[in-house]
Image 1 (cartoon, protein in one colour):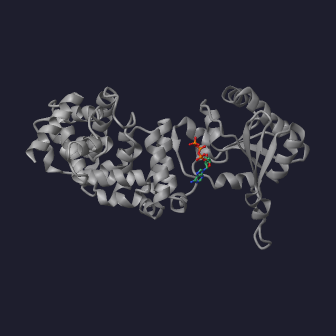
Image 2 (spheres, helix red, strand yellow; image 1 turned 30 degrees about the horizontal axis):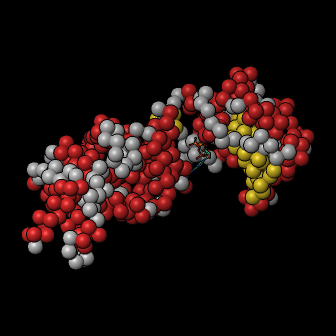
Image 3 (cartoon, protein in one colour; image 1 turned 135 degrees about the horizontal axis):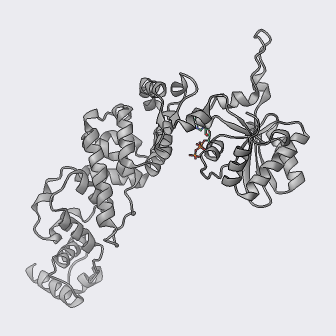
Length: 424
Ligand code: ATP
């Protein structure tokens, strides 16, 4: 496609004046050493979609490091070379950071026996990308600034709202692309085309070969970007949860529970301002739900990498289907059973297990986070008690009395202690 004013206008609209100017200067500098240079990848897609994107990725058909150094000579700033990757980061004097990648020509030299095939180095780079909408470039050289390179019909797929892979073994080559596809579906309201979805389903068993670390990264992105209910549903449709041992019949329960969880955070957690908890359920809560509904939380263990998440998972496992939930009449009663559990674990279980009397549990959480420490170990010693492990038990019982409204001042706490000592 020849340079189009429409595309240049879109570039101008989405990029800061400064970034736009820099791209022109990069093109001019590259032209002086006869080096074709392109803006590439996600930013091209977003320019065409009229969405902001600040990741300026540039590919040079030649030595990106050399180009970066030229830019530094003419415009200042500094250059960070990553020799082994053939890439360089140019930090511009105004504080932008621009990655310049070399298309490594030596990779693409054809062995003599093969027929000469006219593929440009750039096309080879684009060929290795995930989806047609991400496999476009914009020429930056002065003589062709604003020329769209779109060998796979990405622009058309943007119009048709399609996520399409570039070749049939794409998902087998890299199953993370399945998660990426779902993420782009959610982000843009697009959908995979029929063939892409068919191939995703056919290679879905490959996702279990991804490292837990990788799966975590993809899940974090999915659940922070998309609607959790939609993400859970889509991952069921694509048989992802099924690979992790969750039965497909858990789809509806998982989606409904995700909705309840979101609801309780929106309606309750925000009101109770003193909870030790984030404003929204974390991605990990949503990730656990299908396992929970399937009664196979243990299967989530291998994806639980961080210490704080391991602790949360352990707490939830311990609370799951706990019978004690039903038995309480006063909020202090909850304390004996729940005092060691985090707000987050309790809330999760409340929703996932459809615990009865949720209002009372919420009230308990509110009051326990307001508990005053009227007495400490020193007070117990003064009252003639021998220090030991029973101290924390005594103090716990005092908290129970506070929660039940029997003790609400320091004086009442002293009196409570006196009476306690008398019963010994
Ligand atoms: P985002 O807005 O989320 O950053 P992006 O498209 O810029 O979206 P990145 O993850 O930063 O996504 O990747 C940059 C580019 O690298 C993508 O546009 C895509 O062309 C390519 N890419 C990333 N991951 C893969 C992959 N697994 N397989 C093939 N190409 C990929």
